[in-house]
Image (cartoon, rainbow, N blue to C red; front, side, top):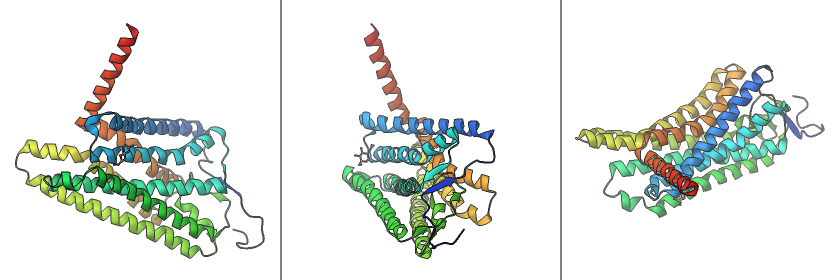
Length: 318
Ligand SMILES: *[C@@H]1O[C@H](CO)[C@@H](O)[C@H](O)[C@H]1NC(C)=O
């Protein structure tokens, strides 16, 4: 890193090094990420469309799910298209401005995702542990507020980071051994970088940890009350409404833990890069499948929708 804070020309472009070492791997990775991106977008879009279109799914639980799917679409769309493009063309540069934009939207979407998952846990907790009071506690208005707050907190967090970053200069290195502009980009700032690392690391760890504790508490209560249900069909029914979500929440928290713990062990760069990308795509990818395959109401809605579509086609052909 040469002369930070000196009179050198400011860096306006970054090089995301990516998978430089393996030119033969490039087409394969291009295909892989392209397929992942298309599947994630299509699957989540399907969930949003189903929830909006099917009256049976107009409940807080599915509103949260549709909102989560919408966030997942935005989230993969901030990180993957540039990566796919650069795997296709071999052009690894990204302007500093684009890197900022990618970083900020990434922060907003991942924070919102985290809050929505917690909101979904709280929703299931109320539904299963306080079934009689549930309709009063969780109505459309409350649901709307929770969704709104998930966004408000995420956007204010990102604005706070922005204000910290604006006081700093980017001093490189210009080569940035990563696939996307995410939190690791914040190591490349100089000036009052200590403030920034407080802003990024501590606040995000606190936010994540609070969400983690809330989800853990909700699920502990849920599991305890499910175990107390005497009839086995009742137990199964209660469990089936939250098992998909339990998997998503667990995977999410494992990803977060991996994201914070793995760097400590200084893994080989390629593995670490893959892992950090995986973190952003694993939930968008599994979410639609978990909900559509394991959830009776969603698969019923899907069946109704395909039947309607088939009938529509048939009518127009005859
Ligand atoms: C998100 O949640 C709001 C409020 O509950 C709901 O009205 C809206 O339909 C949801 N968004 C989607 C895409 O379903």
